Structures are given as C-alpha cells and as structure tokens.
Image 1 (cartoon, rainbow over the protein chains, first blue to last red):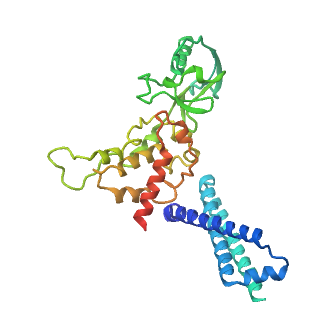
Image 2: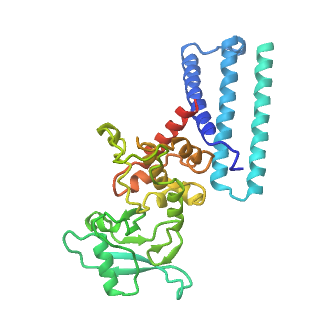
Image 3: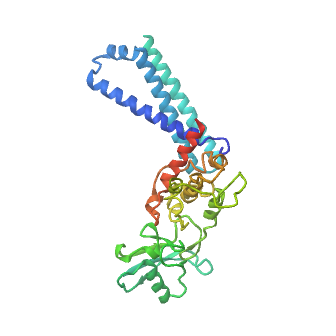
Length: 113
Length: 230
C-alpha cells in the first residue's frame, strides 16, 4: 500500500476540494436565503440550469474525493494489518462509487424531466 | 509538595506502578531538583539528566500529561500531585528512562547534514544575512524528543512517520542555501507516511521547550514540494 499510494497528490486534492466545497456551500446558502425555491418546480428549474447542474456535479465529485482521502488517512493511521486495511479500503471505495452513481442518477433525472 | 512517579524495573517488577513521594519545596526549584530529591529518598529511582539548564535535552519527561524538560520546568507552575511519567509511546528501559533509538533512526533518515555536489571550496561557503535568517527557528532543536513523543501520528506509526523532530531537521537542510540536495530530500519524503501522516495536531508546538514550531516547518516542506511539483 505505502510504496505506491501518494502523499503530496492526496494532500493537495484534499485541500483543493475543501476550498471548492466551502465556496459552493456558501453559494447554495446565499441562494437559499436570497430566493428560496417555493415548490418542486422551482427546485427543478434551478438545478436544470447548466451552470448549477455542473456546480452540483463538481460539488459531489469534490465531496467524494475529499471523503476518499479522509477515509484513507484514517485507515492508514489506525488500521495496521494489511488484510483488514485493504478490505475496509475497498469497502469504502465501493460505497463511495455507489454514492457517485446515485448522485449522477439523481442529477440526470432532475435535469432531464 | 506531592509527587506521583512512574516506577518500573523490568528485572523485578511484573507491571509498572505509580509511587508517591513528598518533597520539600524550595524557592526557584525546578522539576529536575525534585527528581534528584526523590532519588536521594530512593536510590533505585532512575532518570536521565545532564546539563540542568535546557541545553542537552536529556531529561524530557511527561509531567501532568504534557512533555517537558524537567530542568526548566518550575515547580511553581505545576499542579499537585505532580504526576511524572516517561515519554508516552516509547519502550521503558527503567522508571523514567525510555529507549529513544527509533527516534534517532528517524532523524538519521533525513540525512541531517549538508550535501554539496559542487567541489568544496578552499574556504567557508558564505551566506548572506538573509540566507542565514532562513535557518532561524530550525537549527535550535536540541533533540530532546518532547515533540515527537507527544505526536499522535508518531504514536500510531513511529516506524513509518518521521515525526516532528526529524521533519524539522529535514526543513532545516531544505532551507539552507548551501545545501544542494533539494530534489533527493523531497523524493525521500514522498509517499503517504514519512511526511504526510502529519495532520496538524500541533502537540509538537505545545511541547517544544525551545519554542520551535515543527508544524510550521512541515507546512513549509509541503509548500516546497507543491511548488516543485507544479
């Protein structure tokens, strides 16, 4: 695990995604306060805008990458037996990949409708 | 003044235990003086010490939960009962004496000496005052081990994570204008363990008796790496 897993790249990815997550959360919060969508239709209309859709897609990509680096860090710190670590790491990977597919499905159904 | 001191002699004791002592407090007394007074009550009590003025770095111990140099820890600043233990996470040899070999091995890994590729000049390699200033806050380390042994990342992976002391030293040579092995030094620190187990917990900064800032040094190394990679 250790020889080929990256140090600098993972660290940089975590910082960069953190910045995007923060900025996007601020944007969403200010949007919700300034003109909150009144009904389902308004929600859909908002998300269907290409820039918002892209922003949300990037948000969840960042979130999942951020989570991956974070989980990996915790596992490297605390779980030392290789077999258990690889199993848990794989499991986390599958869960995150599942979340990614789920997010894609939600966004595409919302924008397609 | 009341003391509760960690005792363990692997030759006679099955398990470590805490032993209480009472020491008469005098003005200006440091913890090291109290430990010496305890030793005069019980000759078998063992701890390391030498210069007595925070220069040699021998008498690092864990006092009331934080790592300190006993010789420069005034008793007036300590809460009673003063609980004195060996450095956390290190194998105990006897009482407060721990085995620091792994700590020194990590130090050795960062090649803590100047590396020149150009032929050495006949005379000293000069530095401008600005270049010399870059070493301030890095070269003063006395290697007492207070920082590394208070670092949770070092507790979990002491064999793979270099620890704050070694990384501060790595930064000291990366920051030296006379050193010519920047790439090799950075390459040696790559990977998820050696440098990147640091999660900016900053126990090292809290513990350092010389008031150095290993966390800042580690951040500096990361910044150099990033600059070098992009």
